[in-house]
Image 1 (cartoon, helix red, strand yellow):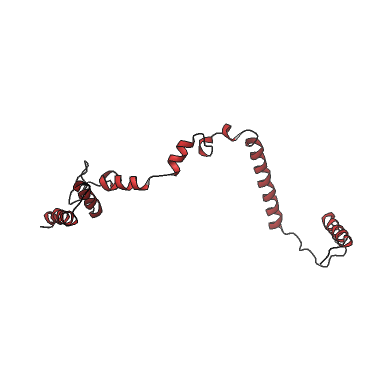
Image 2 (cartoon, rainbow, N blue to C red):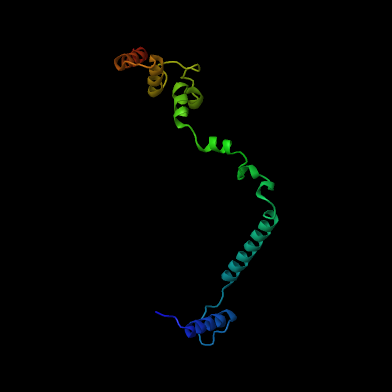
Length: 153
């Protein structure tokens, strides 16, 4: 539909009349304002004034000059890269080889090594590391069973 210039002038006139408070030809009536609505408006105005005051007081300088700037300003990209690009495989291998600092239990040997008191996955990983580069699966499983047989019998 084409919008004529007359339609635009009429809609602008209606808008101006509504903003000026002239509701002479309005068909709908507005509900009287209640004390709750007045309180809500006053609270909204107070919150806006507070936020404007805080923003004008603290946003006048560069972000790096604000207190606590270390929380949101990055000055070293290498430190950021280390924090964001974690090495999950390395962390997992460290936790499997030495679970005592992470589990904080007395049953794990503090120096590492295979033990029947280790969780099964940690014991299996330790035995696999002890086997070297070429691990025989049969020997690895037999060592795991022997380690647990001593704790069972």
